[in-house]
Length: 156
Image (cartoon, rainbow, N blue to C red):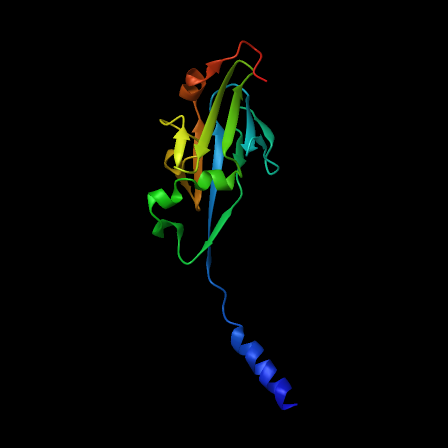
């Protein structure tokens, strides 16, 4: 009986409050005026989490909510946050097909950490803007459409 009491005390002593969790979520919006097909890839294969999504004008897709304990996301440096959209969308590359007319591929390489294209990339945290509530938005815009490669109606 004495051992059972010790065991119960040990169990109760090990139960403490859980660490506070902080969320962060990335959202992609089509702001081009044409339908945009997003194809999410991880390690060369379509990502099981998102695969292929068709966004009409002004439609959005939200990535997975990322959880962090040990303090708010704002405690992290911009370098520590840089690849978080990739985690939220479970992807290391994303192909955007604009109305089967043009195509652009966004990529992240982890070692060393690089992004292609380098000037604007939906897999890079610094290209998102805060929309409140720990949500961050990347708007696919006309410049993305203009910078995409023409595929003459055969973008697959």
